[in-house]
Image 1: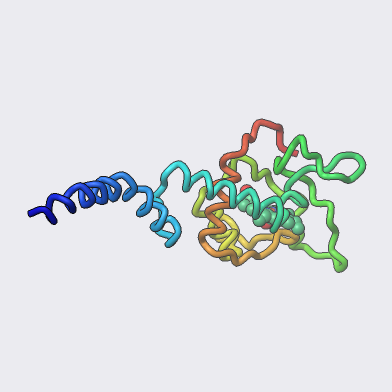
Image 2: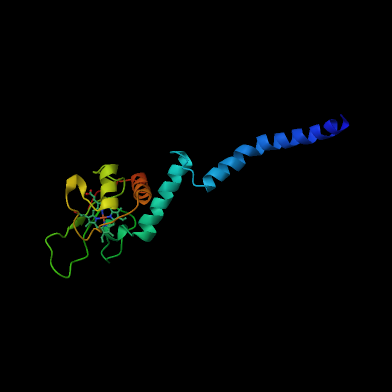
Length: 160
Ligand code: HEC
């Protein structure tokens, strides 16, 4: 009896600790294990952040999709607002697009079409995507992160 009396408070303290800490420990563990946090605001936020990193630092989409100023520098006051193609092919090609469309706000095409372009290199409506746009073979997570980022950008500037 005395033993039980002595142990009861410690057991209660342990139980209370487990109840208080449990959700933190388990949610951390599931996040660390990569369990998808379905469409929660933080998950969406981190997709947008990853998309920004891929667009700005890895794939450099703005090199072609951001207009350039008179000195040939990307005009960062109009990010991803669409631009005339400034790169010319060494060998003239009929499949060379003169314009890289606006990407900010992801206007004009659906998310599915965007995924087709970025994951399979297929243009909208089965059209061949023209050079100098790359034929990307991104994984689905990267493509959707990029689209989420592009959709988060304002597309208020006039297209070039
Ligand atoms: C080297 C230049 C270049 C780079 C870099 C580039 N693009 Fe493009 N992109 C183009 C051109 C040019 C077109 C137009 C192609 C056409 O008309 O078939 C295009 C077309 C597109 C389209 C189709 C838009 C529409 O409305 O039809 C999407 C979407 C797109 N690019 C997304 C991206 C993304 C996202 C990146 C970065 C991950 C990127 N592009 C990087 C040049 C580029």
